[in-house]
Length: 345
Image (cartoon, rainbow, N blue to C red; front, top):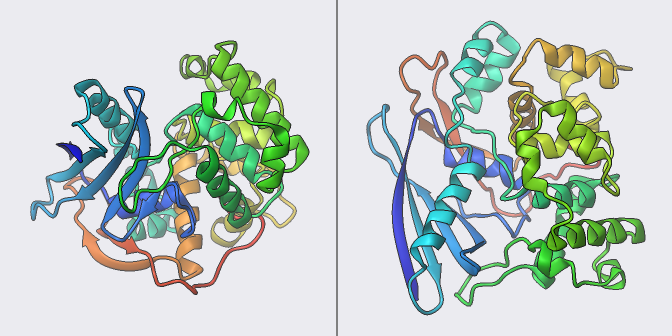
């Protein structure tokens, strides 16, 4: 087995477990694996599938947080270019360079938000490995419960995802070039509706052929990026805002059409019962530019209430973060209560 190792220093507060849970969303997610201490994910780096394993060190110093990353593949060691690509991807997926000092300052002024911020301190805004992955996730979860949507994504990865021939490694997320050669009938057998299957294949083929440059969206502002996204097949306002947040890292975006988010906002922040998109947008203005962070905290809160998070070892807060320490989640044994349709995703 070829192996490469490196470390990343992260400005505290940071909790790997909380951030991974905000990324994976459900215990049965096989693409983003978490065993309570290590996050593992199969990625394609320098054209080759590799497995990345991420652990958080206990430095004993509240001013220092360190991640240890091991990159594995069958055969020779991963290339330098591949390791550099993995590092960049992990930094993006785990939000390691996002400064949340302003969010914690905002939380101090709102006791309802402060409670969530204290409980889940250290979560960073996660992103999918690519905008394409965010789009596929959005389409898969449209009009379904998140639990069902992730089952569909697991099946998609099992058939079309990159694989590393290592014991215990699970398939990664399909790259556009691999999905582009699929047939709608194949995706139908995995459980996708015909409309979703066709839309996913159109997106994959456009990206694979170079006619659709999703990376260019990083240079567009929210308004223009949204307009470009809703012009794509099968992408409406909810999906576009979902991609802005989870694919492009626009943490000011709180997807206003998300039914689960609305339900949680009613419980936590007194959103009026008939409140819709405009009411959510008005509420989110008070959290600008951190509406997306509220969204992730609501997700973790829902997981905790469903018994899928267990609060354990404290995560030290850096001096000046403006909030008390939080705790790190680990998965409970199977059998915990699940969440239904309309979940925060």
